[in-house]
Length: 208
Image (cartoon, rainbow, N blue to C red; front, side):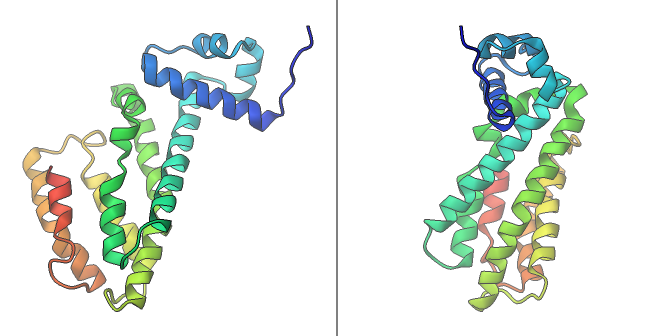
């Protein structure tokens, strides 16, 4: 029997994709490295050459999730007509990591994986900030926003939403979450110097 030799990057992506599927079907908690090996028909030495532990493999799955999510967002924006506010509304309401990748996020909600969950949030923040900055810059060109720091505005807004609204990183009381959600539209409008109520939709999204 001729042994199939794959290039390292192809093999690595194959392992990550298979782990992601198993995390979905069996959950992260109930998936072992042996399960991934058996599904791929590879030796122990092969999988441990790429990933030293299940946690390291989970980190790679997280990176893949964030990259896929960002690619979907960029494709969506390329197909979305309208001004910057229209595109921001579509971007914010269309895709949700918790909805599309809940099978992984559920595993991260375990106490011993809070650090990995934080890593996911940080990776999403780093990937999405430039995308939001592009839309803010578009809004400035359209006369809808007025700021000379589009990237910094995007970073502060996203950091507030991703971290201050995340109950895994910290179990915020419902009253605190609602208070922030209600205040966010006006805060965003002030930071971007946008028209009043142009971001009113944010509260509805965050409270629902």
